[in-house]
Image (cartoon, rainbow, N blue to C red):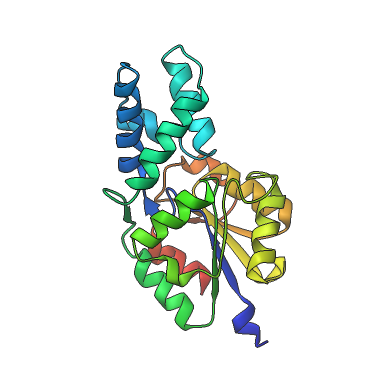
Length: 215
């Protein structure tokens, strides 16, 4: 395989490829209304994102003084998967970047703590799924980020060695997974995580800066 064809960019999803907070917020508030509880401010929801749906829901329920149960989890998942791409949009420049990387021989993958079915539904709804050769969701393997095994398993699905890959994400989970897997990391500075989460990784302030770092 030519050297250029082996290069792989692995992207986190929420807060990196897409601004999904509006739909997550809307679904969470609908769940709270269903349970006759008050909703949340957007900043509160953004702070809960990054560790997967179950952890987000556990945090939301704890904030309301109650425990998450299976009925609430299932209610949220059914609602969110049906409405994941209503308000969610790719961040500015992302569709163009994905097309450019594909056209120049990069292999692309997604490594996200979002459940795989929800991630696929979202990428399909936004027309981004065609760019990716592999997707490792939060329920695809026995582990998830920040466990480096999640990233290693995603790279195995993509058929790429760690030395030919770069992980791009907006959360410490992405950086820690990459570091543990021996993969280069770039922090998405436009995302939901504070830049203090970069942990020494290069910070791309916007998609144009990411393009330059990948070049």
